[in-house]
Length: 134
Image 1: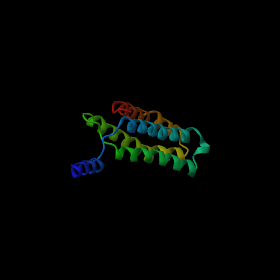
Image 2 (image 1 turned 120 degrees about the vertical axis):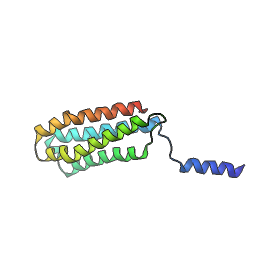
Image 3 (image 1 turned 90 degrees about the horizontal axis):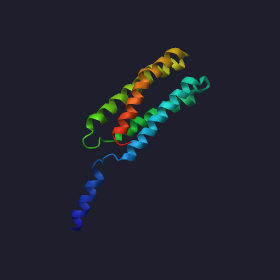
Image 4 (image 1 turned 45 degrees about the horizontal axis):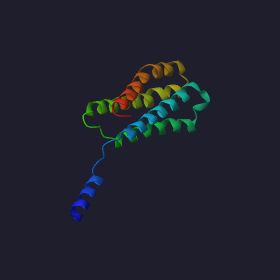
């Protein structure tokens, strides 16, 4: 009996845990922080230095790291897959187009990206996080 309990405990420890609603609530907060750090950079020219660039990168990386650890709740695999795809598109555009436009002083271009496709993507991410329990 003792070895059965030990085996079950070990199996539970080693198997990937299902994401709890708190995990998705934490992800929602990280998504908001990532968006806010970028908006701060966009609207405040004094927040475009190396220190704030690091904040922008770190907040995005925190979302990616959280997503990498999460699993889809049962029956919500499609929503989770869509969330990951939207986040990856958001992050790629952020790194390859939006941040470079901000740093180059192309504020009108950056604002168009931020209030256009990026707003749609982050809104979709937040919606999907809600559907997933966050």
